[in-house]
Image 1: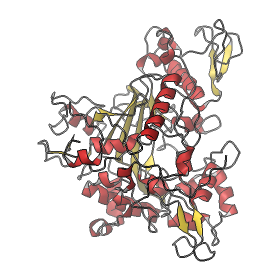
Image 2 (image 1 turned 60 degrees about the horizontal axis):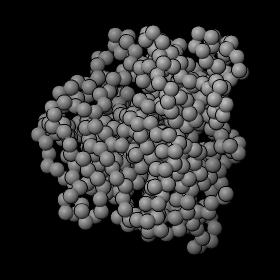
Image 3 (image 1 turned 60 degrees about the vertical axis):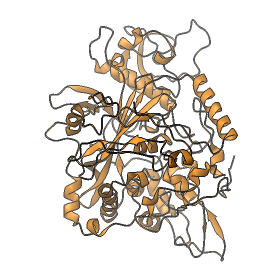
Image 4 (image 1 turned 45 degrees about the vertical axis):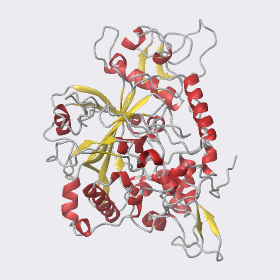
Length: 567
């Protein structure tokens, strides 16, 4: 099997680090030459190179003040902060110091500085809208990518066994009233869509893309004790998972606990439950009842990987995330049918609190002992890449003709930096811990195609402060690179302060910030389409539109960021 590791620059120059390049057009089926990785530190995202100190006067963010004065921008805190067990990253120190390996001090994400080419700039608005409204995932109820994978070309067959060994997309994005996906024949796939509060920054539609999220638990969690498919059992298990992921009680339909043999609401008796109680840590008394998953999952061997635990998903949990272009409907931007990417995660190995703590401690020691050593990236383009925290990640992205193809090893490596080893994640994931819950439309169990972002209140920090307002204040804008001139003009006064009226509007409705104008949406689509045509994803996939990005192309190793921690 062609597996690669990210080594040092000398090894790369010698051609030691090899991956199989993927063909970009359907006409190209023969395997392309094995080539060295372009970016040995591909797991470090472009956002980490955003400028943290900028001059007040003379920059395009002129907010007044004397010559030579600087202001600090802190987008780092979004990902790097004190973590909650079993996340033991506790990486708030990353906010204050550019602790990059030496080879990573050069920013290779050059696409953040790219300007639209004449080809896409000349594309009419109508033609662009027609393009993003054409699905490259579903055609007449079928999934062309799945058919292509069934007869995978040699360029995709990394291990040479004439069979695609990775994930085969099977979600039809046809959801019922409960958010469950169905294929063209009405059969359920097990995928369930959920709405969530997008992470601050580049994950907002106003900065380029609309994304969704779906979850699927293993078959035992979807069936009753007799092995029959059961929506009620599946809903209960997902509610238990939600309670232990979001660390809160979760409302459920009135449920008789007697047949289940489970005290779901934690009141000490088997009666009628209307909620899943989040009880953590579990009772010390071995005779005390402890919530377990229900249905066939209750018959699984009682072990750490089949028992609910705060901040952990059971083995076999899957996530699907599509990243879309922006469509225009009646002058308003929304999620388009065309996919930029389809991202997939599967929990292949369960790691306990102790496992994760030891892993984090080992990585911290290694970083201290060998600060220039890069991370291992285990995996390949066919089978996916391992995060080191029990998950396997795989992605599909557009080829030059706009059809979805498997990502290369290097393209997938760009995903693992955010999904392992940072303080912001919950079991290496972002979205489910941010799921909309009680009080939200359908308690958050729906797809964005059914209902958009309008009317969703701003998520709050533990202090009660609005999370998005805090981000806006910290970065002095609405994106990590300070390029979103539209949002800045909308939310900031001429003096650079956050407009109180817009802060209030944001607290009630996140769409006033997250959804761009039709003009900006089209510009973002054009900018990204240039990257697709060039197939230059190894140089970044963030389409930046607006002012010149505040991004460093070279950084000084271990230099201070100017950010002060407020502990």
